[in-house]
Length: 72
Image (cartoon, rainbow, N blue to C red; front, side, top):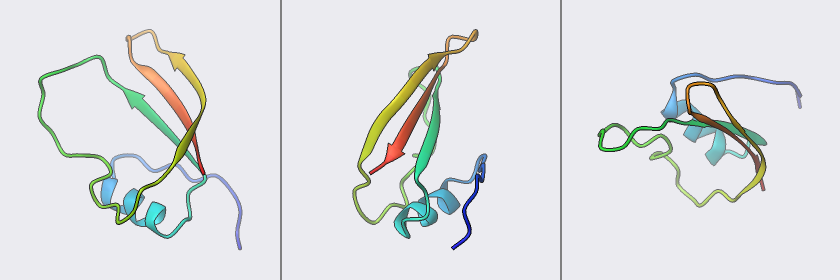
């Protein structure tokens, strides 16, 4: 099996597919400081619950928060 870092931007269905197959071991999510805006659910394509454990959180200058999770 190949090991290495892959970064996926803006492809929720592909990311969900990889999570469903167990190919992702770490997720980085940026939480934006906005409410009241409708949009697609990022992980709506999951077919099972994915447990995460928080690795770290960093506040960005924009007010957004970068959350790093280990997929357990």
